[in-house]
Image 1 (cartoon, rainbow, N blue to C red):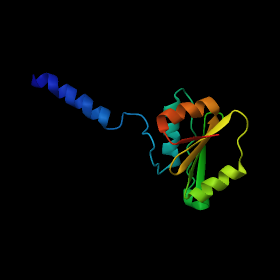
Image 2 (cartoon, rainbow, N blue to C red):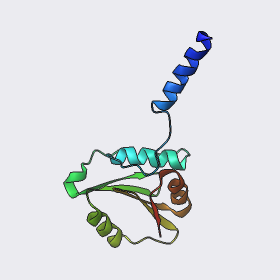
Image 3 (cartoon, rainbow, N blue to C red):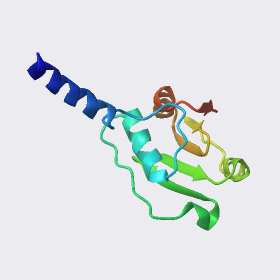
Image 4 (cartoon, one colour):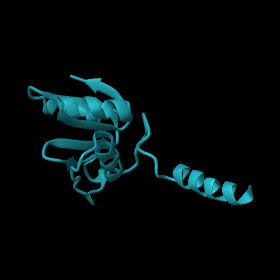
Length: 123
């Protein structure tokens, strides 16, 4: 019996230790981590570009995923609202907004990400 339980315990530990997908309504500390979560949420083989820019240089930071998604993080809600106001959505595009982040992308991709990442789906 001990021989059977040991492998099961190891597998359960590995699954709980980080092999899971993104968390719903998470508060991200790094835009690259948010981009990775977005990539996992949407699925497929898209690439997300890693950025080394510091959020505190301009009170926000962004990177891109795939050909059209823009992943952004902000130091305040006011900065996020200013960026949204200055960058209105084009037809077929949506925002998903979390605690300290915003992602702009194609409508169906954003809707799929919303199901996994949570946040608020905006038009």
